[in-house]
Length: 295
Ligand code: NDP
Image 1 (cartoon, rainbow, N blue to C red):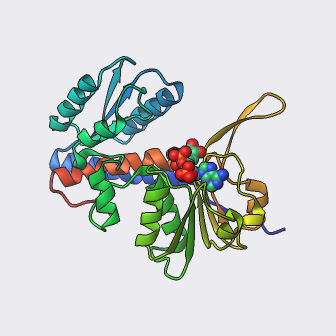
Image 2: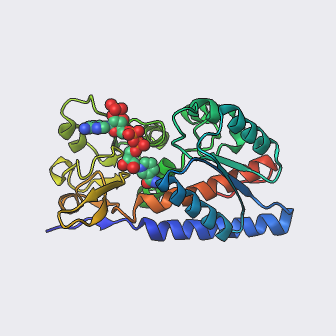
């Protein structure tokens, strides 16, 4: 039975973090600039707390300054906007990330829109979305950026003639992923919950990116032999014996028997996201100080 190459996101992310740390050290030595990332967390979502803690730790490990702002769940829109304004104006802060989801009484679009676009390291501000769509220098959302880096490593920067299918059309993953694949000259289809015959659409993909949020929804039978499969899904699943495990959007066992290369869950795309956040903070710091960007 043929087995796909397993794309090791953990190792890839460690290498990326090491490269970022090297650039950060040079930026400090040569220019006296320490890139700084501010993370804002409102309320007490346990998953968000884990993410924010990991972000802070990895930021510090890369030699950057980490600023953590924890606000009460009943923080008002005006208070949050006031903090964002202060971070926008703070020269020690090069990247600002407001952890989503926000409590329901807050307007996430308005908060993201208030972040200075040049400090918007999540790449969610409409200006960065528009810049990505029009081929201008943008800050690109971390998860699709990580997927692209893994694809670049495997296929090189030109996907001419290849068919790419992205399942999922969220602003965080699906849509920016499609833009990045288009920029690499792939022929891109974006599928979603209203797509007819998703199986047939997926079977046409040389590159299949799954960002759905449904555990093991995509079986090997939907995968073109030899295709590259990037599984963005992170789904917590309760097993019959009571254990709780993480599963992707792709059924790994059956997919790995057909695909040419595939990312596992966990240990695939997941670790790349925070590494790309650090890379974006470095990029933002270089641009804000008019210094050349690392490649
Ligand atoms: P969203 O819920 O925002 O979007 C899911 C998309 O999947 C929607 O476009 C939806 O379609 C589509 N969809 C839902 N059901 C189906 C179906 N049955 N068939 C086809 N399409 C369907 O999720 P996100 O994009 O934020 O996240 C997707 C997954 O990636 C999640 O598992 C999430 O945990 C994971 N993730 C992982 C990250 C990481 O690796 N660090 C970061 C971000 C997310 P429609 O628009 O029509 O509703």
